Image (cartoon, rainbow, N blue to C red; front, side, top):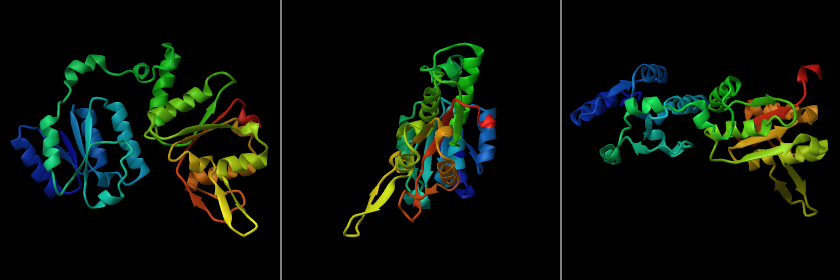
Length: 278
């Protein structure tokens, strides 16, 4: 078992109690040292303080652990920050001030025999069965998709028409921590510039009685999920610049509005053109 916590006294106390229960605990006070331990030894359980999950980069690191250690069980410990903590990966969570549920969890915990499973280790193909093919190129593609998915960064997919760009985008979404949320796709070439603006960013408009109404755009409607933009090169430069601002700051201004709106969505775009020639 590996325990990741910043409090040395808590680490020492919990490690002693675990040792008395015949567990073999290892402890770490930093994400980097924990990753080194996970890569050098075989663990069946990672116990992680949510203080280490305060940024998107932290969640990316945790998601990378989930991908690279498929037989590792992960549980979280919450302290003072538990009220503000979200749990997108739906991991078992226990309060540090009362570990009774955690001890009950350990009593029912059934670790996987890693040595037996090592010959059945997941391959890129087994994790992405909906992409068919066993050629070296397809295997390399699947490896890249596994790595890209957990980074939660914007992605541009380039390929000819009919090569499966939306399938690739959906795969990235399904392998990411946003997989439980929405995936919405839109073709930028389908709309004229004004309607496309309204579709992506939403709009605000006033009635005769001066009341303001709002219609959510796709950035809000996707609700922490992924927005896929087909044929991004067909969108006007103004829209592209606003998308860049959203990617950098997670804010945008709707059509007809004058106040910034915060939202959270991953942007994946696709093109069948050589953008360097445009």
